Length: 332
Image (cartoon, rainbow, N blue to C red; front, top):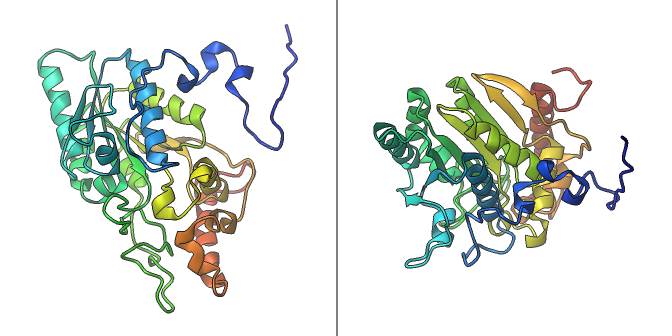
């Protein structure tokens, strides 16, 4: 039997949970959710990482029936959530060093296997500094061994906890405390850094995916998918940082959405090294619309517009769109 749908929102692609059947609603809409990262933490207003961690852990807790252990690298997420002697975590939680969270998570998984506790799953997590840079060797080893761990990178594109320094995930032309826009320098240089999702795919592990906090259904479904698999898995989540990016605290979700709509952050899934699904861009925007709300890119527009640099960033977005087939009907 057909049912008339009432759309309460206009000018948006979003559809509220109240329009969906209960079984299709997000974990965050469930009053019985675990609240894995609860109130009382000291994150900045609009912190994308706090949102991402809560969304990911709550979804993982539901997928595992609450049988979950998480290992957390040093970084913003650890610092703002566990100022001694307090904690905002409501899951079994271990703090590791900056660079060894994947190795510690692998050790936890091995210990559980020895104790015949395969029902308890392991989730490692860290920022882009502890994942893409300092912890990259340990992460690659985890992938190579096929350890039964889902590792989640909350990517805010810099070392935000220690003063907004450049990381291997910092985009070209972004201004940080170590990539100043001085003279003709456009900030972070083009051609440096690395794509952790693509390198994870090169290990041909069972599952690799990217997501953002702007699409809760997509993020939660990928966590659920990952927790339904065994072996090494990797999830890379874009989490805007109002402090480091210089964006308004109330615009965190919008900025994350613009990153996807511009093509600068492709959202996809891959299995055993092959892309299996992409999230197509429904409303494409020029990269300028994404760059302008962020102070870290202000030097591209003031005192004069740096068309050459902006065009370079647009070329990166265009290449992502072609590479992943993000616009239906366009050649890859």
